Image (cartoon, rainbow, N blue to C red; front, side, top):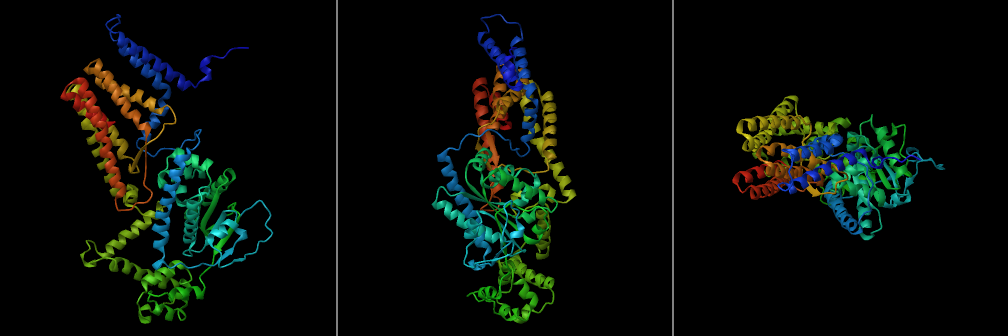
Length: 591
């Protein structure tokens, strides 16, 4: 039997990497023996270059992807995952539950209820809305007892539930009420599934498998590392609460349903999904869940119970309701009823007027509501820097951009150049490219100029700055570095980066002599290689305005000072000169 070469048992890429490292080790030994053993001129330099080429060329694709990744979001890669550390899981579970409660229960649910008034909504089953392989003996819509909580309905459905309803009927509120109950259960029972709330509108951006999308959402919204998020989905009991299926574009909605069904086939995970009834009924493929329910319109008793609540001052609404069918129809949805409570508080029946169409009444309600928000909430509306009409115009533009970009919650940190007019986008590209060329070109020019002369340094800096400026300036997305933390690299990228970028710095420093070549290669390579040990993420919910921008600015200053000072001290001590300190600071800051 023929014996296969040993190299066939290892990857082609790793073999070349090891071979390159062997060559570099030989070069290092040569430097150690220099003076004792006669070596040809420049032999060691050629050995170093050969080692770098051998190690780097077979891995060119990975290094190019790394360079691209420096200016774009990281892609999720599937890897073999180690088991979750129990102590770490307990800590993250506790933090996640606190995050969920403060963000969704306190931050969204409570703030959405006018004066904290909760309406017990009527529910009915919708057997036709689900696709199950098991035979359904009862396909008739049946009402659900009014005293049943949404958590009880969820448990009776085998913890796989579809929540349907008309616009403004309270679907999201029911989902968050379920989240509130599940958070309390998980807090008291360490074995209970960990709940997470997501909005499906962002799935359409990549249309990837639901597991991959969940990993990215856990990473961005809940600040979990991608590896830990993968482990969580694969090995731990979770309850996924997915809102906004109807917010997925109609042409992509069937694919989203298929992605959810595929995920359920491969993962035994508790799941609840919300969607508008009309949009869901148009789908040919249905969700493979255990049960579907639909939220019913508010009854007259529920409406009057709400209007009679002390402190609302809605006597005019109560008096007008029976005589105004359009107002009565709008009051049957919880969202409009809560908006009425704000817009019509303290008005007389005459001020309410009589409007014959639903559209006219909606315009009247929203007009009053906008007046309340823009005038009553301001301490002194007359001191505003912008006319109210201009503010309303901008809000409309913002709403249109959010709709186009599939966003339901606005954060100023998420503003992108694509939201602006074409003229502003062009100016943004020109300005960002110019600033990038200036900020990168001058330090590189100074660095190379100190080593090999001002003319060559200026030209090199200008060329490199222009290249970086083009790369950054033509990006379509602004990426904030709000959180920086250590991670464990999944492959050899960190070593490849040390080799590649070390060779680049070695080329620049080689004109200053062998010691500078080696030190430049070491610091330059380590600076860029270290980037593979760091990961960045976003904050999911901001407690104060501009928090993401402030965090990103602080991280940029801290990283620049850290890399710059360490590099400056090392090279300064080695070179025993001010020039060495300057070069070190530049190398570290750029790394």
